[in-house]
Length: 206
Length: 155
Image 1 (cartoon, helix red, strand yellow):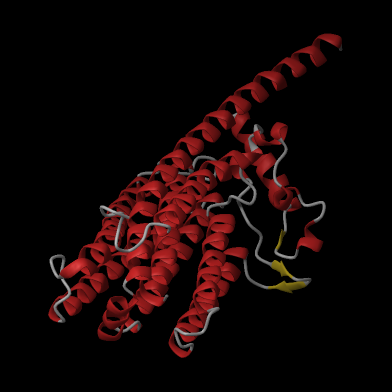
Image 2 (cartoon, chains in turn brown, blue; image 1 turned 135 degrees about the horizontal axis):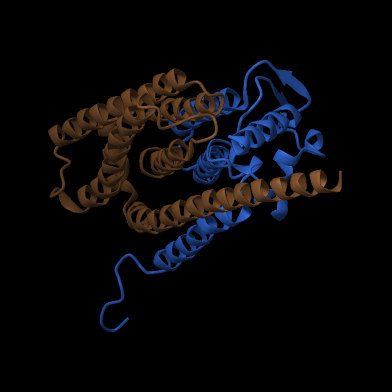
C-alpha cells in the first residue's frame, strides 16, 4: 500500500515538473516576443513623434492635406484591420478547441483582410500622389509616408506570416495543447493593429 | 501521453471555471480577470487559460457572444464615433484633440487587454510594453518643448 502511494506521488511530481518546465518555456518565449514588440514601440514612437511635432508647428499644412485626401478610405481601411485582428483571435480560439480547419479559415480571413488593407493603402498613396503629395513634396511628405509605409511593411510581413501559419496548421503542427506559434503570430498582428489605431487618430483625424 | 491528459484535464477545469467579465464588480473571485498568481503562472493551465466561453457578462448583463466579438463591437462603435466627432467638431474646440486621443488609447488598451491577453497573462509582459511607451511619451514632450524655429545662434 505504502509502495503504491509512493510511486503515484513520484509519478505526479515528475509530470508536474515537466509541465512546469514546459509552462516556463512558453512564458519565456512570450516574454521574448513582448520585448521585441517593445523595441518596435520605440521605432514607431520616433516616427509618430516626428509627425506630431510637425502637426503642431504647421497645422495649416496638415489641414490642407486632410481636405485633399478625405478620411473615408482610411476609415474603411481601419475597419478592415480591426476585422483582421478579430479574425486572428477567433482563429486562436478555434485551435484552443482543437479545431484546425477553423484555425485555417480564420487565419485565412486575417491574411485576406491584411492584403485588402495593403491594396487600399496603395490606392490612398496613388490618390495623394495625384494631388502632388509625395516623399519629396515639402516637409509633410516624408513625415507622413515614413510611419504609414513602415506600418504597411509590417502588415505585409504579417500577411506572409499568416500564410505560413496556415501552411503549418494544414500540416498538423498545431493542436489544442500546442498553439504557441499561433499565439505569437497573434501578438505580432494585434500589435500592428494597435499601432494603426494610434496612427489613424494622430495622422488622419487630429 | 499522461502529460497531455493532465494538460487537457486542467484546460477543461480552467475553461469550466472561467467566465469573462467586463464589469469590475462582477469580476471578483475570477482568476482570469484578477491576474494569475506567480505559482499559478507557472502551471500548465497558463498556456491554456485563454480559451473563452460563448457568453460575456458586460456590466451585469449576459451577452450571447464571446468576449472577442464583444470587444470587436466596442472597437467598431468607438471608431465610428471617433470619425464622426473628427468630422463634426471644429478644430477650434479645445477638447477635440484630447477626446480623440483618449478614444484612440481606449481602443488600443482594449486590443492589448483582450486580444493580446495582457489581462490574464504575466504582468511582466505589460511592464515590458508600458516602459518604452512611457519613455516615448516623455521624449515627445521634450521634442514639443523645442521651438518650431529651432535653437539658432543668438537664442
